[in-house]
Amino acid sequence: MAHFALITGASSGIGLALAEALARRGRNLILVARQRDALESIACELSQRFSVQVLFRVCDLSQPLQVTGLLLELEQGAHRIDLLINNAGIGTSGSFVSQDWMQEQQLIELNVLALARLSHALGGIMAGQGHGQILNVASVAAFQPGPGMTNYFASKAYVLSFSEGLREDLKPYGVKVSVLCPGPTQSAFFRTARVSMKGLQDSKLMMSPEEVALITVKALDKNQAIIIPGWRNRLLTLAPRLLPRALVRVFSGKINRRFIKQS
View 1 (cartoon, one colour):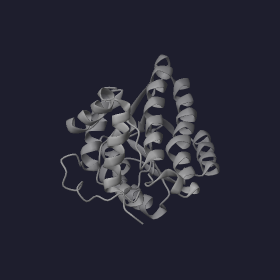
View 2 (cartoon, rainbow, N blue to C red):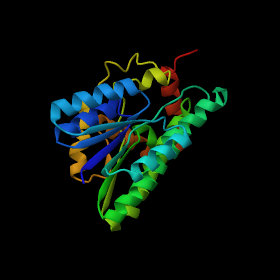
View 3 (cartoon, rainbow, N blue to C red):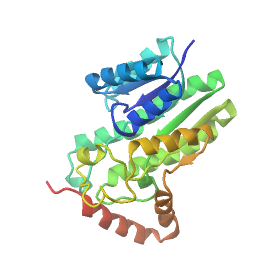
View 4 (cartoon, rainbow, N blue to C red):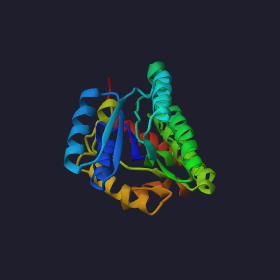
């Protein structure tokens, strides 16, 4: 039975870069995203370039019924998944109470519930097999509160804490768990979250998805628990742990509001 890596949010950004990095290493892939046309094109290109099997599944992971359908298909299929990468996620910006609740609920469904559900289902299968690996994608935002992007920062804090706990839960079963906490990365995230890239585009903090992916796959080889690409980003995660919480949340809010686009 062929082994596959399943990647959510694989049609662009870090998800696409990870798909290419893994295909380059000879990994068979199952790509999950909402955009059929993009997935078809990516699957065709990667399979031709790297002579690997690349399957795709169209699924909106913010919709619980679609997640159920995806899991049923995976459980009944003949493809053994030994690497799960929960990369799909969205952000929102602005005062939390002024946001459309449906968008905030969609964020929670995707960033938190879908990630936990896939980890539960596929992590359970991996535990039964006695091996496997899970990578959950959080953010440097996970290390602090984020006024102005309150729900997004909180969702990534969940991913970080959840992943660390899951790592210890699954260790006795031979399943490895890591969490990726990238800093600012060139992707469509800023546009969809209505966050301005002005001042960030030329920042030394900004990394390309390909840089993040290369660092990540090397860290996965080493079974690194928390992966923070770039020494500047690692420094960013230290400050919230050293400064008073009251100061951290004030500074974080001021920084976030500098980049939030006004409607």
